Amino acid sequence: MSDAKVHVRKARAHLIRTRKYIAVISMDTRGGSFFSTTGWSTFIDHKDANPEWIGENLRKALETSRDYIVEWGEYPLPREKNLEEDKKSFPVYMDFWTRVQEKYGFKDWREAQTKSALVFANWECEQTDQIRFSASRGRGTSHSAWSTNENQGKVFHVSINASDEELGAVALQALDACQPNYA
Image 1: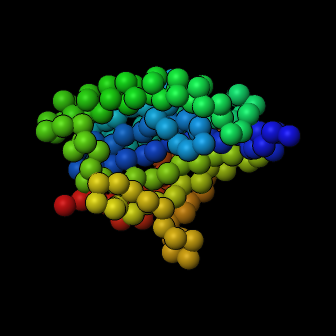
Image 2: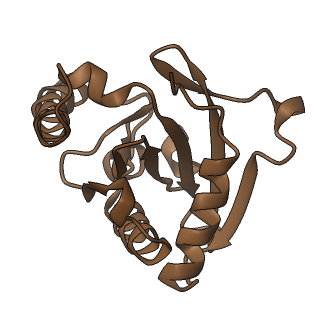
Image 3: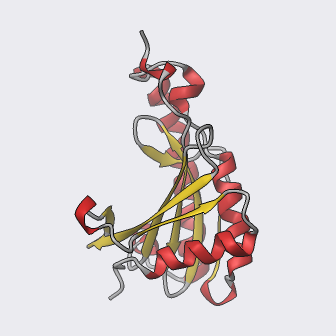
């Protein structure tokens, strides 16, 4: 019996804040979380971002996030299909981060991603209307979740049905709870 029958469809997104920009990135689930090939991902100057913009774009990113475990109805995922998605995802990922690099004058696409705060947004869309925002901690050039015993004040919830302003306000609370990679 396939595990996909008991798998709950998950929608995922990342919210990233640096001193220069804020980005919302749709993530696909394929046994892990990967930059979406078809989902909504965008960025804006930090100074121009407001709760409405963040909420609107997070909603779009979550609603366009794909869960391949559910779509393909198999787990573990077929290796060949997963490799095909990897081949599609990397160029889309690189295009996005190259645009960020060029717009904000970073020396390369890797630098465009560092010195940031990151929030993991997860929504079990068939089970609940509640989006879970988890603040992260910076780990040099990456981010990680807090240990379960450190989650106090680091996890926030809001309904997918909330207004854009409310959704964005809760997302900003989660960003403020992050331990960023700022220099």
